[in-house]
Length: 103
Image (cartoon, rainbow, N blue to C red):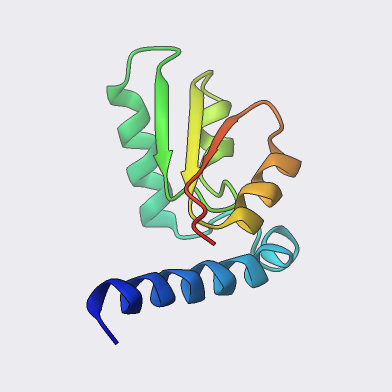
């Protein structure tokens, strides 16, 4: 198999795996509970001007979005998993989403 075909197949497999996790995401995993990550996000937010627009690359189901939205920021979420984007849209319908879905 050539490299381009291998990468395409690998990407599709990855997208399918994340799509399968999406349905359980908020029910099973909820908000991100890693304290050091939450502290990093809070420090990052202190450095931003008020009401900034933030690109949440690889946003998944929007795990960090509650922290960003509660501070009044706008978010553009981008992800390769269509399922994760749909899940994020359920939780945060006002956030602009961009899909890089490849299948």
